[in-house]
Image 1 (cartoon, one colour):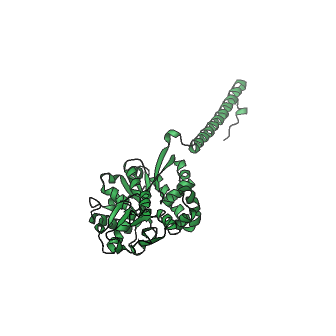
Image 2: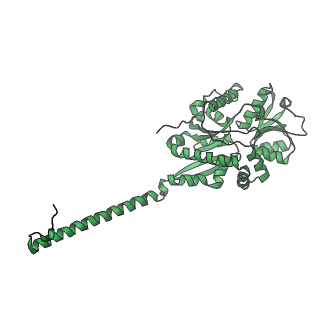
Image 3: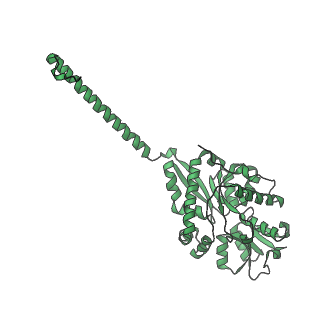
Length: 347
């Protein structure tokens, strides 16, 4: 039954009261709708507003001149764009090799980086090694690292290295290449004279004939091949497959798993693009690294990309490398690789 307020027997006073009540109810409903709309607008603004400076976090990334994908991420600023909505900014630090990069990470100065297989092994064998975790792996190209000698040198094969001096960055991927090549040839590491030098110093020693050979990785290798007449003594062509690794501090991996996964996704995306466009990648990297385009192009065309989690095969391979270093007394203790592998927790 509907009520007709205007014709109910209230008299003028009652009618005015009814009209007043109707008007007040209408205004109340209008005010309520207006306030709800204002609240919704405020909530939407809060959702799209930039994160306050005080609420931002900083992701500290370490990269090497040979760390191609991280160098590309830096050049293209794609990582910053991906992380900005999550309240993160990114800082970048360049290192001459993996051991120096992981020293900085162990010291608490970095959150994320990329190295060859041996640096995290040496780091894990040290007292501070528990601060690092493996978060991703990349296959390495068969010819992206090599032991080289000048073509005028009497060194023409691995057996000729016996008694000779070889420049190498201690604890680097080139260190394992040298060790692996010697093992395959039936030589012990003590049969050579290792000269532990960072790439820039090794280059000077090699050019001035103060060492007989040099074990080195790209792009230093490609650069040296472009400027000197070299003989490749050994590379990974006939040796077991190894991987390079993405590593993170335990604090970052455990405290920011969402951002870590976003970072790995960006690396996978860039890696797929570089694999299909090596020359375009070289054009981006060459000016950033201060290297000739021809050198970077050679490096990118023989590099393999494909970020993947550490499965049982990758872990077993890295364990084999760690055991080899221990057997040659190059690290102080036997280590367990699996204990340092980051595993994403289910939500």
